[in-house]
Amino acid sequence: MSELLELLDPDDPALVGEFGAEERAVYGYLHSRVDDPPTAVEVEDYIATETGTRNAQSMRRLRELRRWFVIPAMRRPRQLPVYPLMGLLPPEKRKPKRETLSSRVEAELYAAYNNRCAMCGKSPAEDNVRLVIDHKIPVEWGGETVFENLQPLCEYHNHGKQAWVSSLDPNAEAIRVSIGLPEPQLRIGEMLKALAGEPVPAELIAVIAREENSGDPLRRLRDLRTLGWRIRASRRKEGKRTRSYYTLVSWEPWPAEGPRAAVAAIESRRRAGKLKAVGTDA
Image (tube, rainbow, N blue to C red; front, side, top):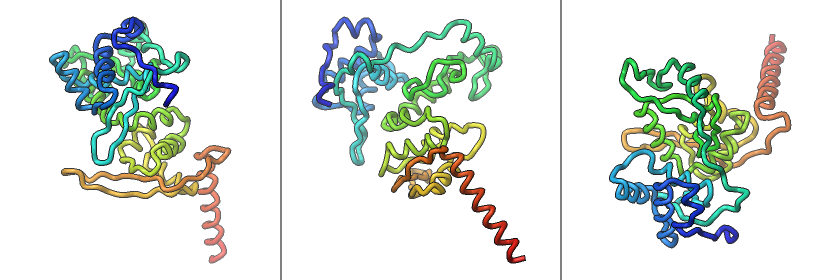
């Protein structure tokens, strides 16, 4: 990271022109703690102290700063991750501000969902809720501001989703490198590789699989095993819940034809072999 050690002063005009007041406040806080990086809870506490409110937007401020700065979530054994301010990205790697949604696209989106929340179905007219536009794949994970990646959510479910996205922040980089790949097996496999040796919860497998309305995310794990990957399953008692985890032990190169086609061919050969054996016995 030696080439990324440059830091801007919190009052630098470049920051004033690029980030909002809350993002600049978080940057100033990270800058002041460059030798003692804070946890997510400390960042949230700081924002709550500065603004007088605590909400699910807190960690979004930090993620917004990542458009320009290297701020990884650094894991610590049996402790919360910390967020060190490592330095300024080179100009060619900085990302622009989020695109502003046009009023036309917004109107088309609300019409497509019948002016209802995509999660609970509530509407402003019938249930007195306020709808906001949500990115199905969050911008922080590489999601684009395009019609296919947008949906209306009521404020309640929008805040809930923001809190959930924040909870996955330590895995954000692994999610970003895999969630846009074309096949679910590729997405799951590349995420497992990015987190090699770490137990990955089943919920995160489902997020990456992106098979909300069809398919079985855990079936894709079996597909990877069919391709020769070794993935260890385990279960943990966490409070009142028992959660399933999957740890990548070893993997094989991706087949040239892609994992979906390769698995289909292997299963076809297996079925043919079984049919032939049955015919011989008869």
